[in-house]
Amino acid sequence: MVLNEGSFIYKEINYCIKNNIDFIANLGHSTILFSYKGKKILTDPFLSPHIFGIKRQKPALKPELIPKVDYILISHAHYDHLDINTLKNLNKNSVLIVPKNTGFLVKNLGFKDVIELKNWENFSNSDIEIHSLPVKHNNGRLPFFLHTGTNSYFVKFNGISFYFLGDSAYFKDLKKFGEMFNIDFAFLPIGGFKPEIIFKNFHMNPYQAVQAFKDLNAKCFVPIHYGTFHVIPPFVYWEKPLEKLISSVKQENLIENLMVVKPNHIATT
Image (cartoon, rainbow, N blue to C red; front, side, top):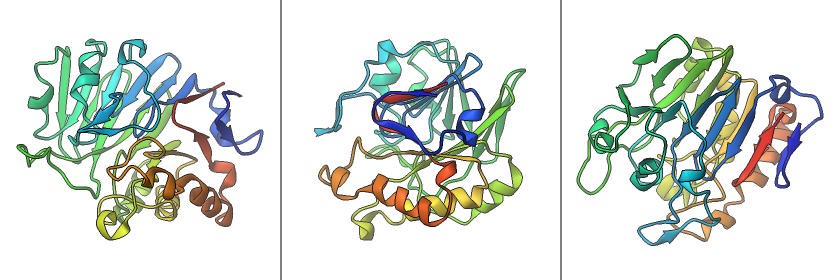
């Protein structure tokens, strides 16, 4: 396993590196570029320098430098997860998967295929299987569009699988998902939870993310949604989500299952 500085895996040999993935790139926030056997999937592409004047903490990769991807998954329509400016600059031959009542936001961007999925719907073809699953998060795209949906996704292709939970509070149905699906990689959010009195119904904290991982019965935990952006910028640092996650994972004897790819870094075999 070759990792750039800032990314790390615990133990030299663990499940996370036995699959010979091409690479996992953390492009910041919930933007993950996952490649396996040449098939590339991009999640919640948000590569703009700021949203409404709130700056991201680290510079983003320019969208035009993203390699051609096969599928793009959008979990929900919030501006830090569905970023029109980023999507405009991505390859339009990608299949774009969006939640219910969200396709109209992207229909004029030029993508060849836009697939709108409600919770519990799925999309499949000869090389991929995508299931749309519920989350616990507020929907809508303020201030005008209040009824866009929210999804998480189970994805299976080329003999490997992952679960992408773009943004969510903890919820008990995660255990059901773990019973329904055999999950190799779980991409779970760990940041944006403070102040908890405001965000506890929308974002999970690192300890809840560990419980989510256990519920999902997944094999490899890749943390996302931290270290890049927060509506209250100082909390990007004050929350200390990664430190809390590592402490919790050690306590639960799951350190072998943790794969950390920090924002703006890549892991590859």
